[in-house]
Length: 605
Image (cartoon, rainbow, N blue to C red; front, top):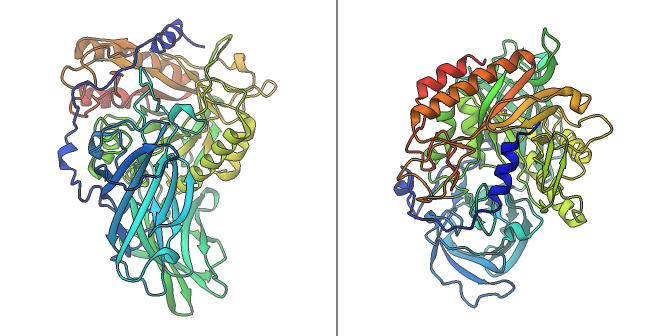
């Protein structure tokens, strides 16, 4: 079911003229950024080592025609890890698909080398990256949202001073790669391109044999945590010791062969939930006899998510054995000063904290993947997360069927396009399935580049059978006979709340309102542009906005006893010309009274 308002809006969006940003819009954290040492926190809280070196800060840069290697990289300084188009990068220029962005930095290696290996980590670089260390090519990576690493030990020179060069090319919406809402010509719901390094760059010293990852799954039926690990190198004859701690007190320690997964029975398990986000501290040691070969610290949560029927026969999302209505905002994760990158770690956590204070229990992270520290904050604060795969290769056709609008359905994706999508989705899931806050995977949104839905759902299920799958948020399904693949039947409707009609689609599971609302209120002095801003339904006063939202909540609450399992309101903040956020884009103005929101939301759960 789709309203006429959506059709009118969508055609309107694509007729809006392109724009350039008007007045510079800053957040409260913009001027707190130290360009010599931005985002200094350890970037991978799920696998912590002490011996590491942050390479964020000033790098030399050059923007060069694609395919042409610059003689020198000396057009100025760029602050890593902020994309070239962002204010905080110090460049604030569009690179474009016809050009490449080059980086260079010399640095003194502060890590102890010895017999250890030195790994060079990139949190995320958009999109194609080629790396040289001391003028020797190390390797190449494609993917704008997944982290990647190189063992640079063979490329390091004697002494401490080393040199890194990086070439980045991003085709934006000219290419078939996942790119979310980035376009060369930003307008409406499409935003400024993001080119280059946008997450932390860092070095890490590891032994010849080391822990690459540690992953935990809850075995709800047996009150247990199951630990699995990936080890690089020869670990034959080695043992793995896992120590579990509760508020600083050791409650379990197990020693077994390093190749074995481990089931730890909890005698009095403490669950993780939005109301009580309890996390166990974990230490994992790789041992050769009594010698510690490698050691990391991490954390784990005892948390179960599944689909089950309630007393009335409706499928619900059960968290830790109890049905829970999930309600939260659509969170795009954009910043006026850093674009894809929050200016500070405090800023990164801010949206989650405020979302919780407003009485929501869930966030849908929309066609973007955040740095690992964002999910760590969600774990610590107690926020459920639905994680989208960034969309791409959308095509430009419209296909309208009864009750369904398909925007950008691309039935002609090339083999290369499909390979790129599957590769990056696999990397994203393997990297982020650690975080207990994530409870739903969303491979597609509104058929934006949707293809081979059943195959992608099966891939998602294989990579992680412990979470729910929303195959295509927005009701844009590829039908397999009369069945909808995945676990969730998801409908988008603006502005009023509605719910899916199971009879329209045949067999169904969870019924979800994946997007609604979008009530807009531009606040003078806090917009990306001085004019031509919009929302799905716009208002001029806070009082009128709040009254309309209250009506939405009254109507939403009526749908829950009819089987609605979750709902997502658009959106957390304004983004560029969209002014339909709960907060302004600069996060300086709350458009609603927070106590009002918390009180009215409490009636939904």
